Length: 408
Image (cartoon, rainbow, N blue to C red):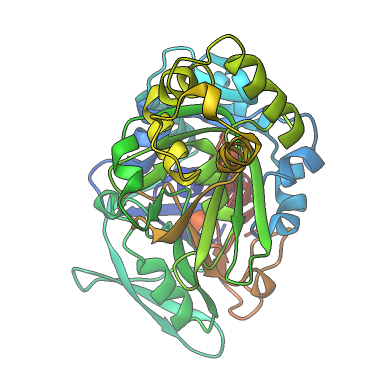
């Protein structure tokens, strides 16, 4: 039996510790917070979107735009079905909702946290409240870890599961990056992901609170090249835009805070420009004496009418009878290409996950063992992997944690 120190009792750490203990190891789990898994407690708006019941591994990986291929082995070995079975064996019934999202029947994240803690404790894991602040490394091996209180914690193996930098109030302040670097690892610069966009200008402010469904978006770079497209829902806020399609774009486009980008919204993606023009003509028919602004709400949310007409170069006071082909074409273009300049994203306080982290090229994808430091492994958000919303990121934590615990 060897000694294992797991650092960080989040989703990855609890699974890693429990898996290692079930291999017969003596496991110590160090967590800086009085209560484990504080971030899990707030996931899914407090309901905990535990995983995604994707049809197969390829479908799962397609939802991981940052280094998805790295996860083939670990997710195959400990799949969404395995996670669901583990949690239900710990007494928490689950349900599958829209988009294959998995939640506890109770809709209480605390039930998931308690199940994970039970899984670890029943395996014999010992918990301590300690923050690990330093490693002592010699000959590509960790000799001991140093706690904030100055205690030297010696172990045969170490699993680093400290998370990224998102929601720093939960304790994710980037400690793990520094510890990994001490062991010789390259850190891909962290960035907020699954996070809203900040937009330039003032126009979006008059749309604050407006939710749009069934729209398409494109993100273009400084060369006007399209780097991301999506279809779904979004929301205007006091600082810019949020919602599912925006959060997903923030994962897939890595340099939003480094280079100029534009957001282009297609308000009528189901219609070509020609069909939208025909739709305008149908709405205008028989309304010749009405103003343009009074007819347009049949096509757009009321708060969007004035901004779209301004983009088309019209005040909206024009009578329908006076609207010609050129103005119709301008309105169609404005509706199909409603664009804004992106100045960046919100910060880590609003980011659901962190992209960046320990370079995956320096980690064995099957075992999560470091290729540079012989008794160190990694799991969870600390690794440079990031997925879209829908339970994929928690599953990554569980799968990589399980691999790290099993292959000590």
